[in-house]
Image 1 (tube, helix red, strand yellow):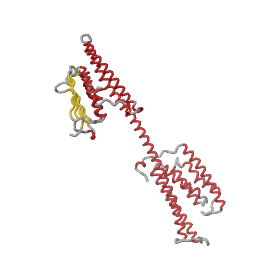
Image 2: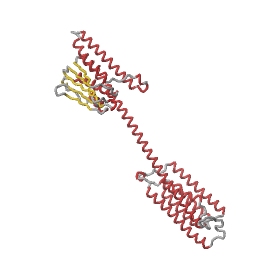
Image 3: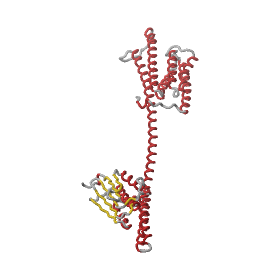
Image 4: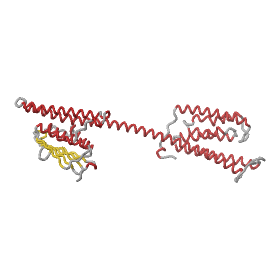
Length: 430
């Protein structure tokens, strides 16, 4: 019934509460053994033979019952002491056997349930059971000879059945002892296995609690990263657009008020759009307490044209090309594509020197959607590969198992190209 994992586990010792209970049980059983001894003497029936003095009988009853006080603290020692005292008491013909037999059962059971060294506990129990059967054989061999030499006149007078009376008595006694010691051994082993499994369940529960705590922490970190990425995409793009428009307004304010007015209008629209997107983000964050249809859907690939239009208002020759048959794509992929275009345009406005053209191409391929953004500007030298914008793009692409290419073009300018795989249900025919 033992396992490899259970062999190395040592059951912790009894708690102070369990030790106090053992003290009470040991004392109570000792008193009960003395009471049973007194009642047995009162019947005058001494099946084991003429008993010793009453004082000696009391001592043997105490010697068998009192070690139960230490049965869980020192199970091996308690079992050996109880077994030796039990055999010695029977050898001295002490008439009390009912309570002491139960004490022997409890000792063997406790050794199986609380023995920390499983190999030693198993050997001691097997040794004690073998010694008890040896003692039973010795007792029968001595008393059986006396019974056969001088049988009582009314012995087995009412016996009936196919088995001879003496053989039936021997087999009945042997069967009782086999069941007695077998149950003591079996239930002790079951109790130890139950304790080990409880320990494993507690360890698994603790591991589960730690895993849940780590998962919650990772979820919080992931949510913070997502919010930071969204805030950067929204704020950086629109602030960059407003900065470019404000600079244009400053340059033409005196000589061309109409253009300055147009630039200020663009600044106003960009600010309004930024505020709207921030409100949408806040709405998504509060979506748990709102109905799903009250939250405005996030910007997706269908709104890329708006980004291109703002780039044109700033003065870039921006073009948008869509190739292939557009198909409905998941909202998360659509939003990722939109944010990548938005970040690429923002980088063109912030870092590309003398950029005049911007080309955005969206291709619907057989198994993926491709977004390609190029410009003809020169790098300002301030581009940081570990910047928040580029990191955000990489995170978005990695979340969908896509690929991202960012860098200068051989013909001049800068390119941002990503491919996002489509789910099987969204893939168009090749």
